[in-house]
Length: 368
Ligand code: KG4
Ligand code: ZN
Image (cartoon, rainbow, N blue to C red; front, side):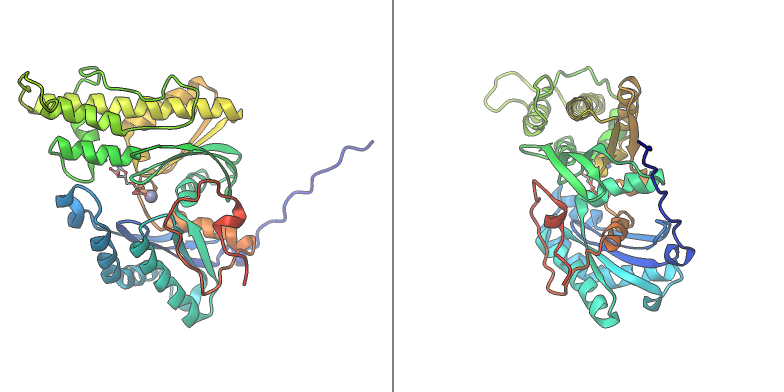
């Protein structure tokens, strides 16, 4: 019997390649817009951060976030178009992140996107924020990276997926309480470090001893793809301020004790994250790992992942640092949906909660 030959895919036409998409992201506390060509070249990537507004609360205040999005959304879109040297007339589609996230924040981006789609007649494409975080790895690679195990580790999520394709994920597990980034933010608050806590802890930990305190690595030795960081956070709190009701005096929180606490906390989180990635790769028999989300910007985490993947003969794709934290360029995944004809209707709504068992059809409304 003749061996079937595989027909190579047709070359992408240069005309299609140069089509432009405007992407809008406002799921949490960053107002962002980007213009991306169909060949995934990012022409502009504008992010207005709200860190200063939330810093004194040690975390994101949803009402403050949505009000700030209202103020920033149009100037940010304008700037993204200007930096890309484009106008609305040059666009082929409008993409917007509609899930998961803070309801008020998501609604601001969606309203802007719908208004532009209605005014221009351009197709509207809904994007899932989690998918977009992992798609940042695909953009960096410049080639197909699926199938793979994917870890999204951010302020709101610590989720593991078996990624069959860019828009086809199988849920493997997640945190049962705090997200890893949330633990970084809360521990930074306990230690008197600024918000967001991740970069502050990373910086402070450089001067500390990661073995100074023995913190829990919850579920690490168990064969389950779940995480828990709230006990770890409490363990740091007790070392920093003492156990309630205990008689022993609490040592003063000197800069060197803060550095040791930060370093020991960071290593406890990273041990678990890296260990669970290894378990997931082994369970699914995958040889590629994708990592995205704000915590993936952490240098020690990146080194630890590289070492694990080297010894596991696994290809590692981590989002570039500037695309780890929230941005609109990663919403370039909308081009994948565009090609599959996933165009949303104007009655599209936001889905604030995380869909645990996402299927391509449940991510997006069907073509209207
Ligand atoms: O992806 P992201 O911008 O927003 C969410 O979707 O949640 O992630 C923000 C989170 C924050 O919790 C922040 O503390 C954490 O990412 N983060 C880091 C680092 N940079 C940001 N965590 C650890 N190390 C870092 N260098
Ligand atoms: Zn995010």
